[in-house]
Amino acid sequence: MTKTITKIVAALGIVAGLGVAALPLGSYAAAENVQVQVRINTTIGSVAPDCGISPNFATTATVAAGVLAESNCYISGSSNTGITINVKDTDGTVLGLTGYSDGFEGSTINGSVIPPINAQLTSANFSIANIAAINSGAGGWGYQFVTGSSTGNLAVNTTAVGGTATASLWNAITGTDVLVASSNAPTTMTGAAFNFRTATPTTQAAGYYSNIITITVATTP
Figure 1 (cartoon, one colour):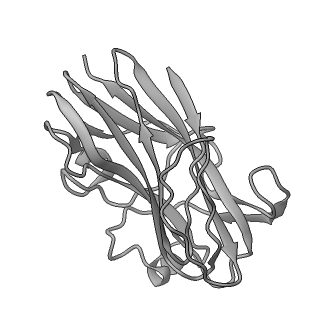
Figure 2 (cartoon, helix red, strand yellow):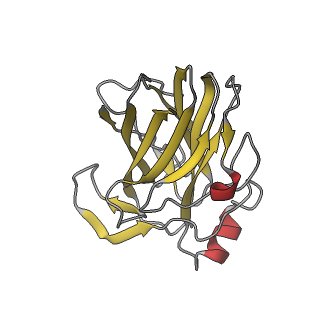
């Protein structure tokens, strides 16, 4: 079973919550394509967390360039055998957030892109200044997975994404599936989430920046 939903990262100025993606877990895998998008404006705005996933998109925040910001996609579900959680870039080729002037299918902004971060980072090191240094001033975006207060033995796959059993480091999206967390016992996910963070220079062109990633949650045998 595959479900596609659009998620918008309200970045570059404020923290904004994304939807709660409730994934039914049976004997099949549930895959979700998640669109990560930011809109850069010339002023700093604010937005309340948006937890809706219908009709397949969350609201876009009006925010400013040059400010660190974060958003998230919560995942809920349970299994009496265990759970695996994977993530990858959907098309496997364009890994950055591509800029558009007027939304999802708008005109591109002279090829403007927010690239993925090029190193695993702690939260403290994922800063505007550090991203500018390691990404040649181009800004960057990445994801982190946290287990929240999930029951069972759901744990981060630290070999693949670093960090601890409850929270990964910040990672760049890749074109191949990455196992970010798993369990091998009865598990209920509570507060489990993918966090998305974006850092850009103040010179970042205004517009919408987006990419689609696929999050797959499956039961273990």
